[in-house]
Image 1 (cartoon, rainbow, N blue to C red):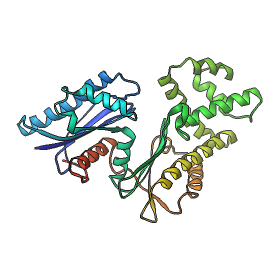
Image 2 (image 1 turned 45 degrees about the vertical axis):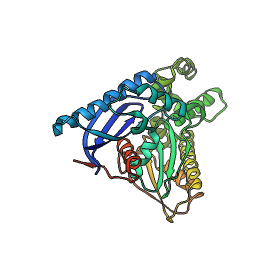
Image 3 (image 1 turned 135 degrees about the horizontal axis):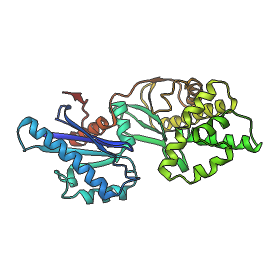
Image 4 (image 1 turned 120 degrees about the vertical axis):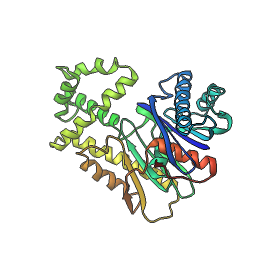
Length: 326
C-alpha cells in the first residue's frame, strides 16, 4: 500500500501522522520537539527517524504486513528556513529512515505547513501571532508569499514577545520620567517578583535566549488586561500591535494575485485568542482596509501536521487530499 506521512516539528513537540492515498489517517504519534533552531541536527534526525519508524510499524501491525511503500514524507520543521540546513539534515538521515530520503522526503518550514493546514491548500492568508508573528499567503496558482517572522531581534511585530517587550520599555521610560505613568510598572514588578522597576534589568539580561523570549511573551496577557481597564500606555501598545499585524497581512496580500473579490483570512496564535483583543482587532482591521477592500475570517481547516500531509499528497501525485480521520 502507498503511504503519505506528514510531520510537524514545532518548538513544543513533534506530531507525525500517516494516511493512505485517499487521506484516511491510519496512524499518529507525538514526540519531543524537532526545532532546528535549538536542536543539534543529529539529534533532530534521530527524533524524526523515531517518528517515521513508529508510524510505519504501527500501520504494519494494524494491517498485518511489513510490505508498506512510503510514497512521500514531508517534514515541516521549525528553523528549516535555510537551504543549507535542510540539505545537511537530509544527508544525516540518509540510510537511517525506513524510506529513501533522496526521492521521498521533502523539508519545509513549520509555518508553511501551518499555512497548508489552515487553508486546506486553498487560496487565502494566514496571520499567526503567538510568541512570534508571521503572515503567509497562497493564491489559486499555488504561489506563496510571507512577511515578518524574522524573530525576536529583527521582527515579529505585533507578537506576544513584541507586546511584552514594548510594555517593559514603556514601564522603564515611566520609571525614568521619560514616559507616561502606567499601571504596567506595578504589574511587571509583580510578574517578575521585584520591588523596583530598575531591578528588571538583570532579570532580563541574564536570561538565556529561549527563556528570555518565553518570559517576555508571558507579559502580553498583562498588557491586554491593563488596556481593558483603561491604562493609556497599555492601550496604545495593543492598538499598535493590531496595526503592525494588519501591515504584515497587507504585505502578503499585495504580493499575490487573488481571483476572488473577498480574501479569506485565518487568524492563529495566542495573541488572537485573547478575550480582550477587541481594541487590537479594531486597529488590525483599520490597517487591513488600506490594503484590501473585502475580507472574511475563517477558522483553520486542519492542523499543521495535516498541512504537511496535504503537501506530501501534492508532491506525490500533483493533487491535494483532505485528511479524514478513520
